[in-house]
Image (cartoon, protein in one colour):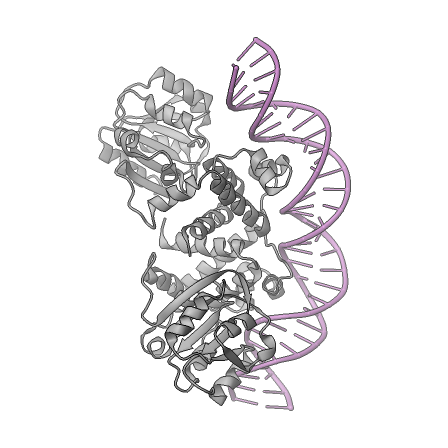
Amino acid sequence: MGVKEDLSVRIAGEIVLSREPCKTIKKWREVFGVSQAALAESLGVSPSVICDYESGRRRSPGSRVVRRLVDAFIRIDEEHGSKILKAYERMGVGGSLSGAVLDIMEFPYPIKASKVMDAIQGKAVANGDLLNRDIYGYTVLDSVKAILELPSEDFIRIYGLTSERALVFTGVSLGRSPFVAIRVSTIKPGMVVLHGIKEADPLGLKIAKRDKIPVILSGLDTQEELIQRLREVTG
Amino acid sequence: MGVKEDLSVRIAGEIVLSREPCKTIKKWREVFGVSQAALAESLGVSPSVICDYESGRRRSPGSRVVRRLVDAFIRIDEEHGSKILKAYERMGVGGSLSGAVLDIMEFPYPIKASKVMDAIQGKAVANGDLLNRDIYGYTVLDSVKAILELPSEDFIRIYGLTSERALVFTGVSLGRSPFVAIRVSTIKPGMVVLHGIKEADPLGLKIAKRDKIPVILSGLDTQEELIQRLREVTG
DNA sequence: ACAAAAATTCGACTAATAACGTATGACCTG
DNA sequence: CAGGTCATACGTTATTAGTCGAATTTTTGT
């Protein structure tokens, strides 16, 4: 079984097994950087069909549809030089995570963003009204290393599971770059946590508001404590 | 992501992506060693529902159904001591195949059993009328080593992809044990090739007829030639 | 701020599937 | 050969996925 088949199986399995296939479909479309219209054309259907799937109007897509969807993703990626496939290949089977990724976890059940905030003694500095959304996991990143080391397409490592997750940045000095990175990326986290500063950069917050991403400042002292608290959030 | 989730994704992805989800569903049910009735009960539906899926009467099961199916497989396995999960774990990511497995391949498209037969200069000695069925891959096994070395649950390695495949036994002396092994196993190959004998054991053939498995005797001289021809069958 | 593109929502229709119970047949066991 | 298990086949009905095109909202680019 080649890398292509492996990735296909992963995507298909993930779509089917996820609580909300619609969101997972959307996530992968965004990972592949295709618009609904382009995807629809590649499938030979009208754009609204894609919208229907992603909005959850059609909640349980048949396996035939999922298969065509996955095939289309791979096909489109090939037409674009197989960037995603190569990125996936690069991360290898159980490949070691870059040093930039300090911790990563999927929750066994959805957890409210507000609960994550409380767990790390955080306070909301943007979009506090969106904190009742569900979060399905988190990724803790070393800000500096992430910027220096992470190859451009390695967001698959970070968003590989669900995009409805918390992105936690440690060692933050200003609090702008994380948001610039998010802004550029096609795929958005469900919430962002900054650790290491007392107040966030205004421009960063502006971006967050624009993208409707809640931003939390963690009040914990050390990075170790932060990770420890996050690990216990499901308890 | 734990082993359990990994296996779940694999199964789900494989079902969805396969040309005939029905057969893949059946394969996995057999791997987990559950009867249709037991599976149906675990799902809270009537047994005919399972049959309908496996027979292909419902060709494109919705993702909700696939998810419930996979969950049921895992659940049932847990009730039985997680045997399958452990076996899967044991084979590891890209784990090395046992020395008993000489070659293994998935065809990019279905190939008629008769074509496989011709490629290896074989002649049918049982169920020759079933040779127009589709074959999706093959596994070449060293008969002696397979019997001596293969742990009982490692059929996942062999049947891991599609069960609609050719099982090729080399170094056969009598031609009985392979069929005994197949008989005992809950999961059946699409065809069996024996290499190394001039005529097959009558009892072995009887079993094959019972299970409707075509049996081919390969006329090629060496094992190397056999593998070479098989590799070229897709050409 | 404005126009263009993309994404989403909606209503209505068709085709397909989910689900059920029962009947049938093959096979093993006593 | 009778009884049990397992798998399959059939007929039916309620439900839903799937489709389309038009209208609407959101996002993007200039």
